[in-house]
Image (cartoon, helix red, strand yellow):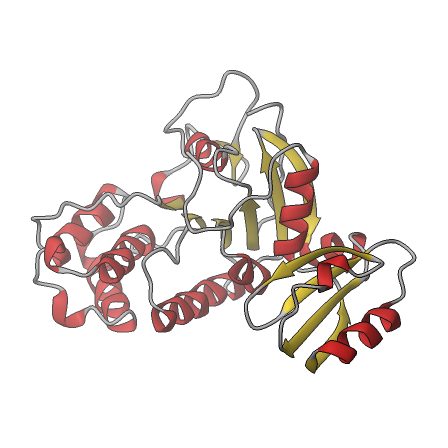
Length: 293
């Protein structure tokens, strides 16, 4: 990391964004004292990260750390005890979380008998079973189907409402927009953007048009006044050049396409991510579910 300084407010959800290789996972491992720092200090809840009580923090790594041939229930209770929780306190929490995440019938099975999505839920339970105040989550939606992802989103929002602090690293921009209060974007180990989500979007202008249509829209990027087009399949997000007329775009598009939506909006985090990382000297990244190492 290159002189990165961040202050995460207590309570709420903080998004850590960046392309593959940016240094996000390295930063999370430094926060957890898995990796040491060459300079600077890291504090959690006002205490040095190498001294903070293990019962204060829950860490969900992208790479799962479960024992594949160990029974799920015994393994989760074991991890909770390692983090300072008594078995008597952890057992009712285990019953709650396995029921909430649909793993009740799998508690006595070995981890390698679970699907990828179930293993992700089990890893999440291991992260929260000791009731931490700070959650550090590296791609928490990895391996989850849409139903499981929505359930996880609800759980994380509940934690936020309870006043817990969540630090979330993800490439899923829609999840970040729905969850996060603040975001930081790092690239090549440097901080290139930080702030409240609403402020970040408003600072990047309102010269963005969302267009949904039927037909061949390949010509849109060649229209006068169009700076860029991001294709999301069922719709496109068009960034206009400074001074460009959105009504001119509407007229040109309606002459050749059957439009079902035309809306001037703030840019999405996806568009801001691509714009800022590209401007920082990288090619436009493929926003995928793989976190940088």
